[in-house]
Length: 326
Image (cartoon, rainbow, N blue to C red; front, side, top):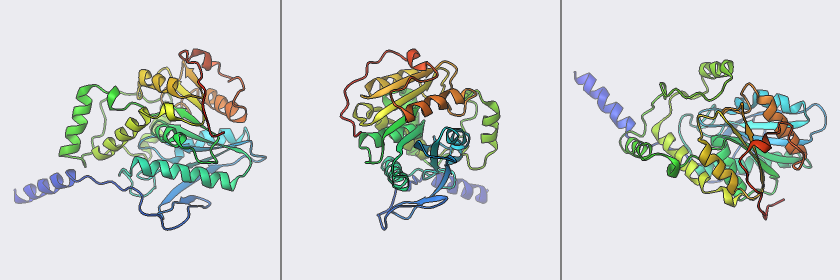
């Protein structure tokens, strides 16, 4: 019994410790290597890239969603490369094989890393336009980057960005998160039994379930971190200072429609698209090529008609004047 009691004490102590790993002090200039990016504090972020065989018409830096990692862009990157578009994706801190897996860094760290990556990629490929693509959590980061865009950033693509902050949550969810964070921030609930479907691509979802680099159980302090990020993103749309392509699927069960369209309407210079057959993982759903064709068309010519026709299906939202960096 004493051993059982000791184990319980260890569990309680570990569950009660908040553990985050924000960036440390800058000690060097960031640099881009073949399969990794090294940040100013020395953190190494694993990197994947998909380059076209011929001339590069545009470049996209892709940011994955919560508990995912850079491999999320493998098929989209290959597809876009056939359209002359180069893609870079990296494991954000706390995810995949990035530093301190399963632990949150900070909103500021994630935004600074994305800004550094845009700078590095635009320096590596002077000439072509550079766009930041963000899915869900990555969309929230991208939106914050676009509020103070680095010189090399020409636009952002937001795929179901995580803008579901506390003000859009029911009181019991806010209370549950606050209580869990106070009592057991290291607790890792699995989320099983929620009956939420992120995509109609069941084969892809099964592969994610078998991938050891995809996080299956999330620490409460990381959940609190992503909600803090969503709070910041929910307040950010009106401050976006780049041209924006906003994408949302009618079957999205992760990010609710109301805060999503509110965010889209607040972005000054944006085009918004609704996909009737789209889910949350738009670039990996069964109709992903429809989304990717829209992305390619917009990156090559931001005023061109979008092949899907989904722009006409989005809620009416007149574009506003924007003092954008471009």
